[in-house]
Length: 429
Image 1 (spheres, rainbow, N blue to C red):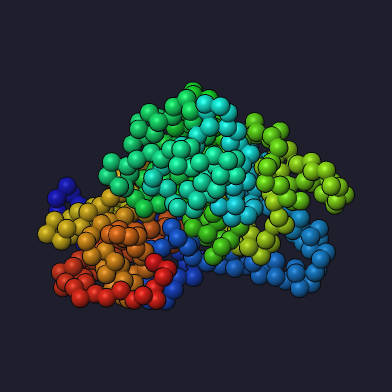
Image 2 (tube, rainbow, N blue to C red):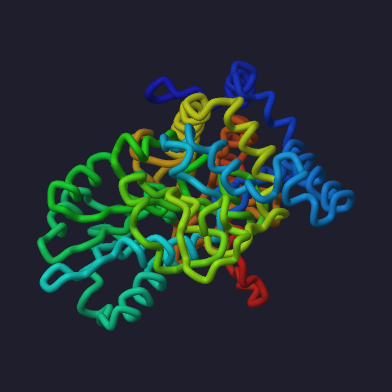
């Protein structure tokens, strides 16, 4: 094969035999008869996550309200415990991370505190490819400060509709920008931004900068504190495998602990005085001070088992397999599905510039993605013409990649997508 690519099934199976993470696949519940490639939207349930959830259910059953202090760990400290478990994975100090709320609520909580507009420096810089919820939140936060989003929200444009030019981002870090909010990974193309570089450039211009890391935490090593990132947030249900709607996380650099949370709630109160129930708010001087409501104990429970597994496997080892697995898939696409099928790869080709999903483009992407799902290959579609395929290192295999490419080729070769009619009831893609 060209460039020394071995596209045989036997080679894929050999790669799986040599995979040091292969044993973790057996710990996951993979829907029968499927190749599951949607972990960038919802990670699979693992046995360890199931056990940690069942443990909390039993504590609730046996301890009732006493579980807040007598459970192990006590529910009262679960948010901080989960923060400690994930701190090394994201390169943060233990008190800089807490499990709380949802991604969007955490955007509101953090930016409402850190965005301090002044005359002539009152704009927020984001990007036009960001996940819509981030933009919705920013627009609302601007309006709460009586600022017009049409004037005060600057969006970095994309030249190709798929990726961002980091030099263009820096170019737009002008003197009127007070805060920058970017994704660590573009949710459509999988492009991984250089957070260290962008943070350095922002701080050279006296600009606060933060990242939505929902598509990177759990599969890519971070050094949030070392890079001096001001804030970050991420969900718990993608690569962290915490379950649908599971508790999210927020990171706040310790240099901001003394600032007053603007979106306040009683669980952000000083921990040892919280049940004094005083009316004067005094926040905990840690990321925990930005908690709002009581933590979802059932929503956070599966993360205990899942984080234990990820830490055991090692985030560096996970990242190493992620790059190899995605490189292999892209090589196969280029080798087996030739140009006559008009399949384009919109994800960055270099592994260091890409997260753990690959996005391919085709005029009939919606039909092809539906056909793949019907045939047991669980992928997702993003309008108008993108199919995303996530190869999660803990449960996806090289043979998964090989068989997916073969199935895509079969669909294209037979022209099965012709005459496709969208099922209007399929509102989740």
